[in-house]
Length: 317
Ligand code: OXD
Image (cartoon, rainbow, N blue to C red):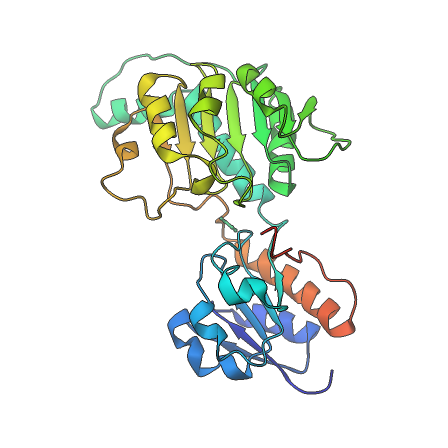
């Protein structure tokens, strides 16, 4: 490929990031801008790098040279819509770089519940010195629904804590850190045994509403539900009802059907819920990892070798 390759980034880049990309593609011209400014550059753009929650459809009619869209996130559900979904433009994501921060985030929730940290913080605020219930996660059962790179990192850490690990995965595989594998047909056999259930599923047509009242009813009244995937994999009114009726003990939620979570949501007022604003994957090292992955795929794109993280746009992951 000899003509300049125009790469448009809808995110700022450091000098180190730019030089990493230029090492992979010395003939590239890199432009960064905000989504609302992208129309100025899009008609000359060959590769567009964006976030999965950006709706790029308004740009698409002008994107006559576009060959590849890369998402800096794992989720691509906003990008993968309408004409973009039906086009033959390549779509890739940043799967594989989330395991460390998301698994640490999950364990911050699990340990917080187990050691009653929400209670500790409430007491501290009120200057109350009073003992409260504490527990151990050693020997408890963790059910991970969706065993990709994030799920596997959660499983590995769970084993280090001495937990029993169950996981739901579409296909059979040899798993080092999982005691028992289930599939989507047998998930309901797993749920009654879990002390913690972590949702790590991508949001697709098949997984939308996966955790509904029926599934929450299968869990124990002492189970904590954790969602670090996408809000849409759980039916939020069903989750709220399960929390209010005590079908489950609590929930830790990083993702919601509507984000930001509206102030009117009953979830804000439930004292058995921990809410974080969709930052499970965030860390000071996120962009470095994402750019490294992109630069590696860019060399593959230029050399015509097999690229990684290509999204099947019909399946959505
Ligand atoms: C992602 C996320 O999709 O962090 O990357 O939610």
